Length: 287
Image 1 (cartoon, rainbow, N blue to C red):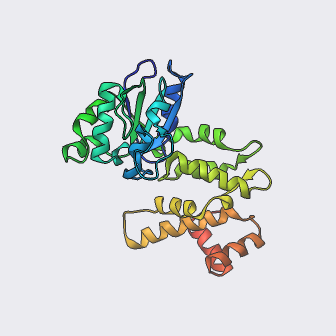
Image 2: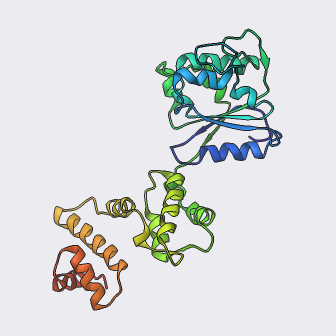
């Protein structure tokens, strides 16, 4: 895709790294020495998005910057413009965007001069634009204009083999994961995808004074999720409860030393007696 000037449409859940993919396409293209401009269409109000994309002339509206403003299309000339969450653009903005793509010119708001622009468009969304187009929630002509080269980025839970490489990339120098944490990450469902992994490593590294990230350094929401993901979901109620109990006790046992003091702490946190804890360890063969 990088070797052409075709528009690219990136499809993927939030946090999968769509902007990183678009940057990679730009850096591998002949446009690499020209600007890469990124804009999140979902974060800019409809009243401002057109002035951001197309710019405006002096006096175009009340409160306009004196001397006017250069739009993102002009700023990205000869380079790449990345339009993230393009499905959130209003119908009116979609029409103006289509005109720019078809004619290769942009007209600032309030102006009459057509300005030539040579911009490659990479758009991204987590929505099904084809379905939106069929329901008249997205312009069908714009959809076909953007969907020339199509790339679907799979969620992190569908490419778990990437996790060790991503961890190596995101971890601060002189930090490493314990074996238990790495196994944990391989089992987690990653609703926030790569962004969640990166944020988690930043958080955990702040708590790991000795440079080794352990289970206790992970956010509670992650530890709760892994327990939920691995609970048995079929069989009798008694067997499902037993499965959940065994997994939770196993997670707790991993946090503390395998001596009497450590077992007392586990029992205390579980709200049961030490004798009951040993009975459950034997029952579930956790030792």
